[in-house]
Length: 77
Figure 1 (cartoon, helix red, strand yellow):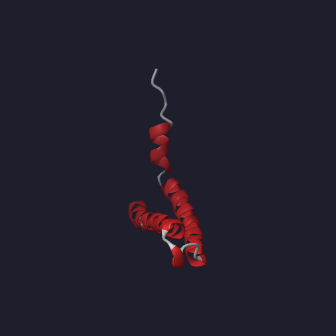
Figure 2 (tube, helix red, strand yellow):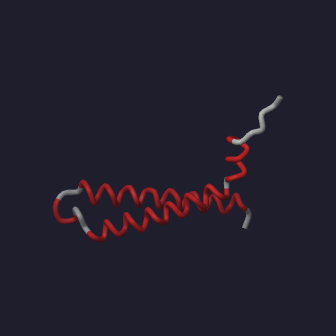
Figure 3 (cartoon, one colour):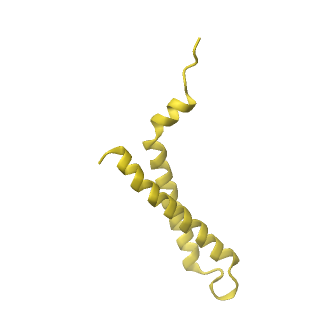
């Protein structure tokens, strides 16, 4: 599979992991009574956060050539 196709799929999973992490935290912290503090939400937040971190590192690695060209340019004399 080409790198661009991999990045398109990776970006979808990256945003889903981010949204899952944030929504689990919001429900865990701010929804009153019954569900607040739920062990399930805590575990979901933790797992989604780990997946988000792994996908973020993978995204960075796949885009490293762009990062290098943007931030580590050779200065012209």
